[in-house]
Image 1 (cartoon, one colour):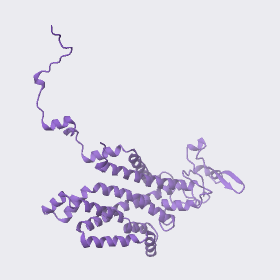
Image 2 (tube, helix red, strand yellow; image 1 turned 90 degrees about the vertical axis):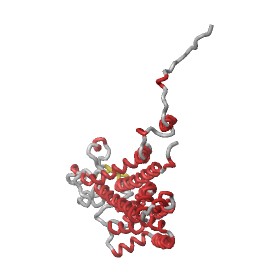
Image 3 (cartoon, rainbow, N blue to C red; image 1 turned 180 degrees about the horizontal axis):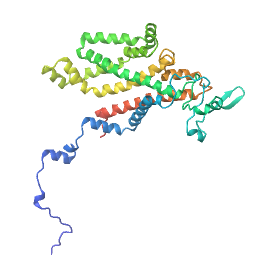
Image 4 (tube, rainbow, N blue to C red; image 1 turned 135 degrees about the horizontal axis):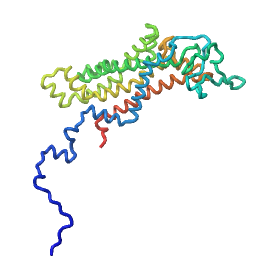
Length: 353
């Protein structure tokens, strides 16, 4: 006697059907279903959002930009307002003073030892003043001046990006696309400009112009695009002989069409990352020029000039230098983190396997 199988399942014939080659590829996992297919932009954004460092940098940049816009209007002080008698007052924040922190007290180091003082109790109507980051040696609010100075740094960052885009990319593309004597001549010009120290260029500009944002802007315009032009030249040399560029020229496309419609879109990712990396360098250049006294003139404020002014009171009133240093460091670090994340997100070779 034959025993019946322990498990038997009968599939009706109507459940069977032929599948198309596309469905077979989807079922095998080689491609995504058409409804789930993601564009290159969405895929880049998705991978960028997974980068915690880049997201932290982006959040920090948005916060600093928001404070640069709204910060100078959050209290009743102007960035150039001097109040006699309110010099060198320690930070005092409403609400936190009840907890014994940021209540205006500071430890003053004297020849006889350390002495705790509260300048708010020594000035007339001191209870009505709240300097959130303290006041400087001229009685100006450091909070307002810090965010006013951040505007200058962000303006310099914007100038650096525009210079990279409109001068660096165009110069590098032109040099590599036409090649030959044109490339040799244009590269020798870059070497001459790059061989002149930035400090010498700024000094010459100050002799012709008054120290200020114009001289700093012209300095960045004269030298800040060299790194981008070299990157653009390298991208053009790599892509100008690709099949799509040769096909466009064969079909009668002009030089401008080949450069801006064929080469530029395929090198946009690398050039964007290079622009992001150039922003911290431009911000540091402005801060350095202001620190040595040939940047933004008083009473205007920049992060570099604030650091320079506060450095003289570092030993007696260290709180004066804390806020501009932290904002400058956070700004430069955030742009570096965001640029690094964009590089990983835009580079196809960095895709997760």
